Structures are given as C-alpha cells and as structure tokens.
Image 1 (cartoon, rainbow, N blue to C red):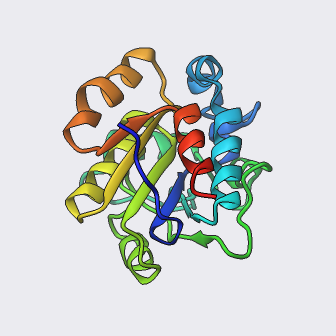
Image 2 (spheres, rainbow, N blue to C red):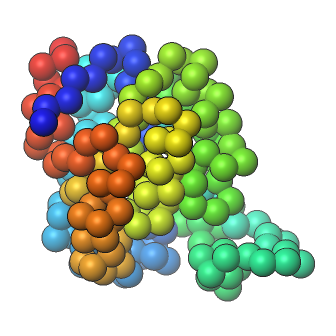
Length: 208
C-alpha cells in the first residue's frame, strides 16, 4: 500500500551513520559489508536523504553513544553490545570512526539528537521531544543496524504513537537472517509500512 507523507509532518531518522559502520576501515564495516553491499546500502541512504531534502522533509540524525574512557565501567548489567563497545571502543569520541560518514553530514536545518546509550534512539534522549516540537507524526527510519537500533527505535516510535516506516534496503545487519527477522518477522508487528528505497523515492517524488 502506498503511503502519503506530508512534508511538514514527516521526518527521516538517520540512525548511526558513523565511519565505523559505513566506511572501509571502520571497526564494524567488515561485519556489515556483505549485507550492505548486497542491498546497495550506501547508495540507498544517499538517495533517501537527498530526496528527503528535496521534498522538504525533516532530517533527524539519531547517533549512538560515542565511546569515551570510563563508559560502562562499574555498570551492573551492560548489555552484550555495550560490552563489545567497551572492548572495541566503537564510535570513539575524537576519532575518525566516531565521525559521521562524509556523505552524511548534518545540514544547518537538520536536527542532531542526543546520543543513545543502548539500541533505541528514544530511550534517554530528546528524540521524542524534538519530533513533537517539529510537529512530526510520521518517521522513516533508516541506517544501522536493522535488527537492533532500527528495530528498537521503530518499535519505541510506534509505542509513542508515531507512524513508522522501515526501508528494507536502507539498512544492514551482520547476517541475511537478521535482515529477514527484522523485516519479515518482527517489523510487521510494529511498522505501518515496510518498503524499499525505490518505492519510497517514488512516493516522495509525488510530494514535491
């Protein structure tokens, strides 16, 4: 079913567009590279962000916590991902890996949300507040990873009353099975629309 996105009410939420995820030499790139290349992730992210800007949609950057010395030390129960970040220093503050990919730099009109510590872009951040202040009702969630931050952010958005769109080929995961779970098993339980980049671009073009 084709969705209608009113530009004033719609935000593209770009989750974790860090060099460590998206660039050759990034700490996590080797783990997502196969799926990312198979779906054309980088080109699709570029196309959606460009189309969003052309259609006057709001662009929200939803970044993960950039590791800093002392993060997660002494915590009662850091999750497995946080344990991995503590060991690998993923997205470390002040490093190239912790910078946004050069093709995904915030424009003056974009909104950069406070960093999330776990998987949901809403938990312990200002995302919900900032979306509401801009009158947003529809969120198109793209970026990484499909079965963790994208899923958690999308599910949380639904719980808060937003219309949620997932884009199958504007995300990636470590394994194809994780993509299948994200879009065929779990996504349909909370997302209002699960689409592809080309379908979304066609819809956005009609809003211009």
